[in-house]
Image (cartoon, rainbow, N blue to C red; front, side, top):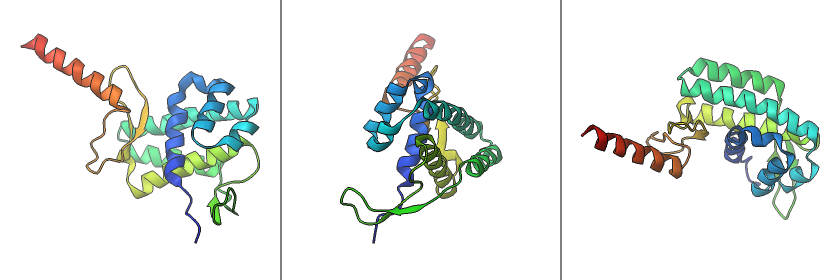
Length: 179
């Protein structure tokens, strides 16, 4: 039996697209991200049109994370449902690179289409399996990077260890000044 579609990696891609910010407009930066995440075929086919489409998607995905951080579950679901309509899933059975038969969400078409479908499906999967509260924005000032909380106790508040450490040091210094 083939491996299931890895929606977790697609959800992580959504986070990475949101967190790229203005770097997403740079085809070289986007190509590097795709290569680093094992999407070398997509990286080799990337066009300016894909970059523009992914920039628009980034804005919509950022809105999903903003709504989640604001605790508005209905808005998150409405936004994701709208994205699911605009980026319909076209699953196909695939076998490549010595792997057994498995599902891909899209094959062919524009790179932006495949990445959009995957990102939206990945986030929809997180929301339906784990809950809206697993999507968040970093609470370390001034960072507002997105993250997916996969902790067992739903305790994640920062996008990275770096931001967590920076916030903890700032809180410690604030307590020292106040003492």
